[in-house]
Image 1: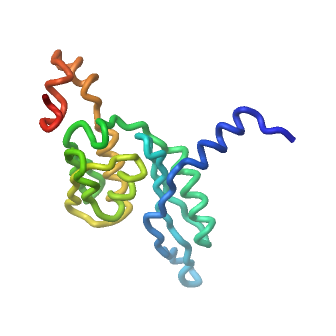
Image 2 (image 1 turned 90 degrees about the vertical axis):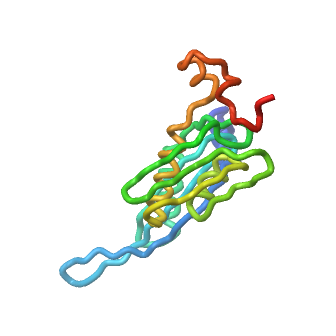
Length: 177
């Protein structure tokens, strides 16, 4: 049986996505007869070209939880406004008690981040950035705060037109010439 064009495009798209399992946690539900254990998995999926998504999967076995989280992450993909290898401006994302600060960095800096923040940024294709995780260290909330921060990014061209300035005024200082 021949594959249709849509099937070929979908299979190519799924092969080139970067999937990262960020966290696997055993969780318990208390029921009348005792505790019922299951697994919660946090997965980040990105194309390394400015598109990233995060998903949570819960199941009785780890492989099932990973599969569910992957499916949710693929459905939750967001397009980001990136500037070369970094982000266009500083931004803070807040979810519950977790705060994540993202700052643009010059080329060659690398990804200065840890844990869930690093996974999200590398999957998105950001290769030069400074970050700081403030407040709660709950991995689920940190990943969500990073996604929320990335959603707040605006491209220099669009923001410049909104402010009535030239895009040159809004690009990071190390790129101004």
